Image (cartoon, rainbow, N blue to C red; front, side, top):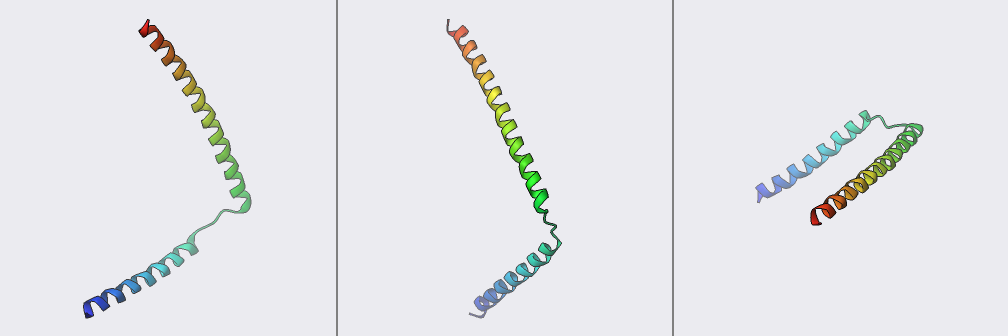
Length: 75
């Protein structure tokens, strides 16, 4: 039974140590300002739309080529 209690004690000590280490690391984090966050968000949204449009165009072109090739092969 003492081995079981030791495991429980070790578990809680590990949890406490983890929380202490997490708080210590969070003090070292530099969070972006509101302005930096807004500007990077805009960049991400613009990139998503750009690459979405790009992939839609590429998909359309590839599908047209495939339709053409399959039509020629089935004739």
